[in-house]
Amino acid sequence: MTHQVETLQRMAILSPPNSKSFAVASSRVESSGAGKSHKASHARTIAVTSGKGGVGKSNFAVNVSLELAALGRRVSLLDGDLALANADVLLGLHPQYHLGHVLAGLRTLDEVVVRVGSGVRLIPGGSGFEELANLSHNQHTRLIAELCAMENDSDFLIIDTAAGIGHNVMDVLRAAAEVVIVTTPDPTAVVDAYATIKVLHNHSPSKPISIVVNDVVGIGDADHIFSQLRSAVSRFLNHEIYHLGTVPRDAELAEAVREQRPVVEYAPDSPSARAFRLIAKHLHTACRVGPPASGSSTPFWRLLTEADV
Ligand SMILES: Nc1ncnc2c1ncn2[C@@H]1O[C@H](COP(=O)(O)OP(=O)(O)OP(=O)(O)O)[C@@H](O)[C@H]1O
Ligand SMILES: [Mg+2]
Image (tube, rainbow, N blue to C red; front, side, top):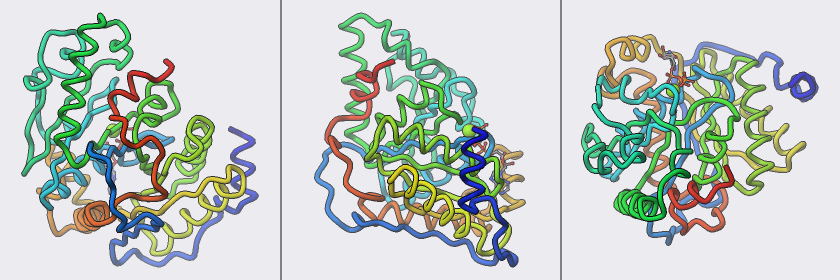
């Protein structure tokens, strides 16, 4: 990690940008694949992760899912933060059952799924995916069939993960077709984002990775952070990353969290809600961020359970 800090410092990734106050929430997709048709029949699977914890992943996953649903897309949201389920808390829900009950064979997927907003199906987390390995062959086959059916019945499968480079998180990132890495302009968050990209790149060198810069105060901060991160990733890993969007620091988002309501419903005109809406619009219209993923017709759940644990 010390070496990475030095490298990023050399790349000027930690130098302060020219900053003025952040006026307009901005978001853009740099996408060579945008607009092209995407033939895979299953959902577009996007894992949301970060190097450092507490940078805004769950808020991003929940609010962008709700906005995609508002645009008419069928969205499944998997709370993949297994140690600390987050999405249900942000939505003010207290689900009785979670994925662990399905994995244990105690509940069917249908009994666990909670419908929220205008078409988001939340799969509450709360148990390790490694339980998949302990199922009998029949249980495993039935479960994967159920999960794949739900995936096939969705346009998007958004997976909110825990932070860090633990093997559970990496298995999810490897199985997802695309990965969104959330960072803040905080230098430690940026360095940890780079570390996550590096580990992911070693496992999946062609994985489409996009960046969301959250909690941005100064105009220009997000572009500065992204371009420094991109040049380090490009130079040292020879991996292209994309800037999916920027979310400003917003007191109304913090208030919405305290109220256990998603900000896009609590304060739809707030700067962060507008940023989430803009990002959802990009995801809605752009077919895929980055280059086409290889092997994209294999469902997420099958890839996940076939991962080397
Ligand atoms: N754009 C923002 N403006 C203001 N506060 C924010 C913003 N984004 C996140 N926060 C604050 O950061 C807290 C953490 O956000 P969130 O739970 O989405 O992060 P996380 O990355 O999912 O955390 P964890 O790693 O613990 O899962 C929120 O409760 C909120 O108070
Ligand atoms: Mg979270």
